[in-house]
Amino acid sequence: MPEVSRILKFYHPRRVRAIAPPLAPSRYRTRMDAAERDLIAQTLADCGGNKAAAAKRLGLNRTTLWRILKRLDLD
Image (tube, rainbow, N blue to C red; front, side, top):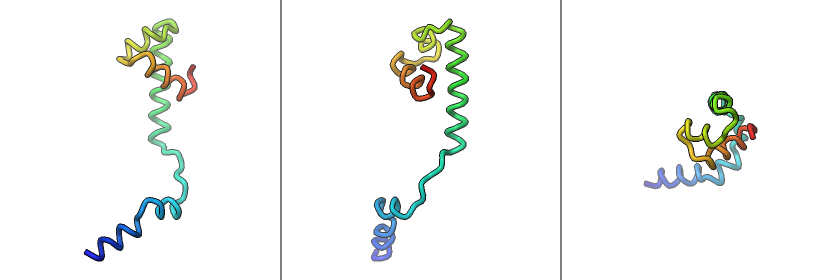
């Protein structure tokens, strides 16, 4: 059991944050954002820019669509 406490102490979140280099943006997140941006832009174009209709077509709440648009700089 003493071995476990030493491991836990070494990998304590504050210590790890202090020694870990900052993370670069992942390619996965970048690709997902691009796919999401394309889908939403196309849906908005299909709905003539009507955000309520686009949200309904995407199965999203209007406020959720608004947040996504803001995050992706599509607003």
